[in-house]
Structures are given as structure tokens and as C-alpha cells.
Image 1 (cartoon, rainbow, N blue to C red):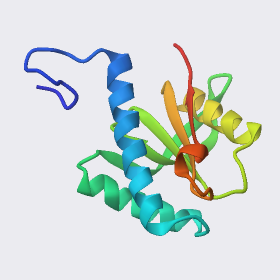
Image 2: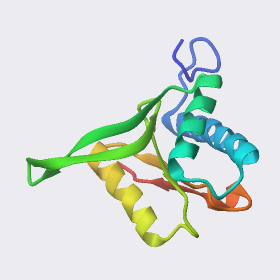
Image 3: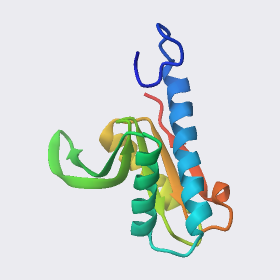
Image 4: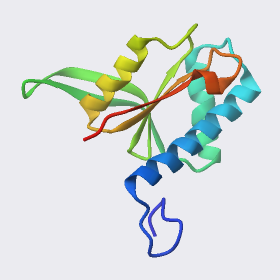
Length: 139
């Protein structure tokens, strides 16, 4: 049975898999925010969130490096904050508000990595749900 199968023999459709995964990540982020509150730096939230993922058995890779290609040539690399279950990019912020440039950054990361879904999480808010944006691409 795969990681996201709910019933033996039943494969969870890709959309449901993303929904379950984003729900689990958001729940972990809310727990971190509930304990730490706003106002700290991004690195502290990243460390706390990674610890919460470990507690919840959410598979992740931290500070993942990807090649950036331009017209079939690798021109350098970029680093994303978190890659969850090799499917979901999680970009963390600690800023006054999430702007269009932050959303654009997530779209660029999705294109560079070939992934289709990301969460942009700003911990510098009173209520975390106000600081979470889901960004996706369709293949």
C-alpha cells in the first residue's frame, strides 16, 4: 500500500493526494505558529516546521537544490525551502504580507522543478490561515 492509500488496493487520485498532503502540511504549520507566534526569523520557523513534520511522519527534504535551465542549457541552480513527499514545494516567508512577487516566485519554482503544487506560508501574521496561499500549475 502506498503512502497515501486510504484503503488497501485503492490508489488515491493525484488531486486527492495533493489535498491530503497540503492539509497535513497546513496542520503542522498551524501547530508551529500556535506555539511560536509571529515575529521570528524564517530559519527558526523552518527548523520548527521540519521538527513538526518529523513528529507527524511527513516525508520532507530541506533546502533542496534544483538545476535551472535556459534553452536546454543548465545556467545555475536554485534552492527551495522544503520539498514534501517529493511532490509539494513549501516556500516559507516572514514578511508584512505576501505579494505578487512571492506568488510568482512559487510559479517559477514549480516550472523549474516540474512539480505542480506549492504552498506559500507567511508566519508573520496573527492568524496563520491568513498567511497561507496555495499556488499550482497544471501540466
